[in-house]
Length: 503
Image 1 (tube, rainbow, N blue to C red):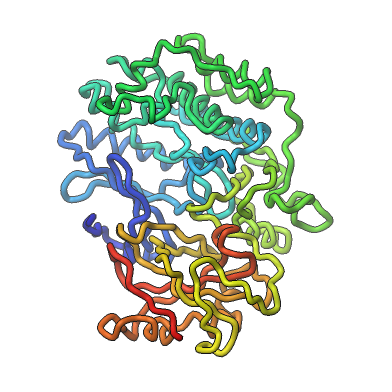
Image 2 (image 1 turned 30 degrees about the vertical axis):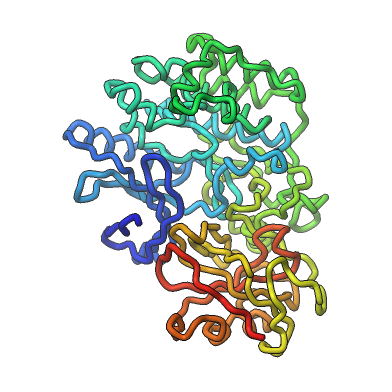
């Protein structure tokens, strides 16, 4: 089990994700009573030069955080054992990796607009002499308002060209790295452009340009060695993508760094593509954007430094999972109060994906439904109103954050790995809700999501009177439209608790 960090001013730690060389935590910043993300790198910075470089580059990342296409870095530092960390805004919408699944494929227009936004962010960074070095879908995050931003600026120190090649590539993602990264060359701005183009390519087809089918790869080779073995393979054009779009991508994916456009040139080429104007709907089920009179509630303008990142949110085609409720809350707040001033961000929220932290926009609730959700047992007689207990197969969660009273966007977790919460019941909402406070106040949720029900389902030696109980909205279409979930927990666990629905 990963040891919970200790940083002054941060409490309520919860592990959110683990990568090859880092762990991302959710924590509460006590001074501002807000949730933040803390990325802690496993590699120690052993020399004063490495430490100074990290602090210098993370400082530059902090100064760039006012760009709408860059995830805000609040502060950075070193732990007592010289491992570096970044404290960033908590992006509850997850990363672009969930869009690589066939059922979640975005439109070409959305990919184009995302490329304009992130290329503009890279141009701003390159202007300040900062390279990213690891642009990939996992490093483009979606915040609580549905805006896309590039994360992990400041971690370039982890990929020093003087490192051993295997060590350097371990800190990168080989599938999205430019060909020159596989040789002992210093990283360049054009390498960032290549990686962004590879990211857009993957969003259009589901895999990186030179990806190899895992079933066909030599199991004795590392990921980097597999990619290196195919560096001479030509990048295939995607037949289903607009030819002009592919021309722009192919130029940015050129093996020769000198033939690639600059980040600004790539941005301008993408922006000029004749794919049609950006559309404005955030929700796939809506034909018109939310807001008074159907007007786009997003800001019409943005600061001069972000002039190329001001596109209106593009439309997604219909997805099997409904769109993020955090975006709904924001749009309604903006339409009513005009609260969206400050960063000028305007990229769309991506379509949710089952198994990721996305919530469904509530649908009209059935008055009383006899339909049982998969794996649940009817416990209405025990509760005194329509309720279902279970599920038979445990369902666990790593975190259940709610930002600015938006509906909870839960973080799924495997029950046999580290998690905090577990589902114990579900029930139909009495009415649609758009805020977490409304969901918590729903009579059905208050009646079902109770510690007494949890304890009744647990063995006597597992019962306690201080469970943390949360009501979460549907996280995917598979959750059942109009049904909430009740989750409970207290601290981290690595195995689920056994729940026996009351008879």
